[in-house]
Length: 355
Image (cartoon, rainbow, N blue to C red; front, side, top):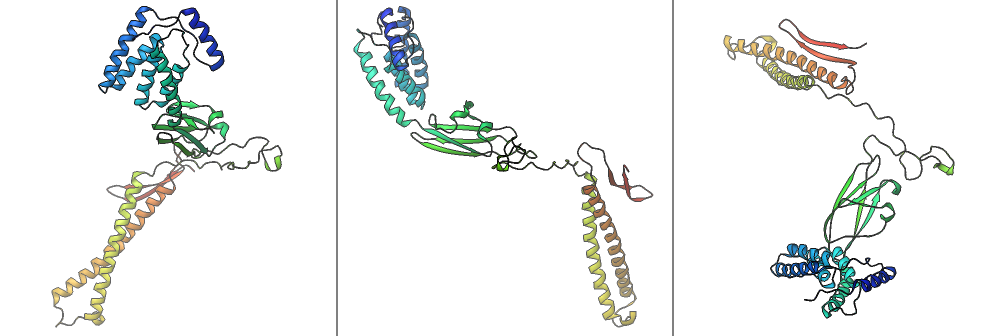
């Protein structure tokens, strides 16, 4: 394969002319014999890899060869490899470069054919490249910072479709005082995909009104249309509910449940006494001494336990409510609290705090 280039002086002149008219790349130094030989070897090896299915490896060889000689044939192979890998934007750029490489009066027919093929690729790739149309709500356009796959999008370009390769892309939108919004979108070839993103204020933050934007257009601090009014001073964060409060509440509820059970049992024992022992006098034919004692013990036990457990339950629930409602602000000084006290000689609660 002949990779010879036209003479340096003629190449430089043509390249400058093309650059001034079409925006093509500026001329570069004529490749040496070593460059041409290395590029020829890389091109052959790359085509072998491509035919064997290793397109990624072939692309590396084609890219190295094209960097050495900048010939239409190396550029065309590189563009085809990028196209096969789904890198349509890169493939189009390389094909466009091939079309606008400086012409030589004695260049081989392989170069001419490569240019024609590259020109056709430019048109068909242009139609296949998808685009993403980003729409952001929640913040003013001059506050937005948007990135696609880590690459920033200039604010002036945000309203316009952004050309991207087919496949999955990550969109990240930020603005001062707003939560970061992330979206993933998968683009298909030739697709024009709208992506709507709504960013939300950071909890506890509000949009600062702009000076001079108020009702009636008067200078002031009124909230403009589309802006949120300043939020009230956020409530001071509270300390977490202490463990003892949860424990006291659990014990209190359990005690209340037990008190209800024994109160029901006491009511049942009382109803049995009124039915079988009218006037608290039991008929000997119905109850003997032992059954009378058992009924009396049941009566007393149910009554005592229902009252005791009810009192304990109410105390436990009260202590838990005190611990929840009177807990201090996070990191602040404790104003007042209720602390349970259990010792071998006493049981109860203590109110402590700063007065």
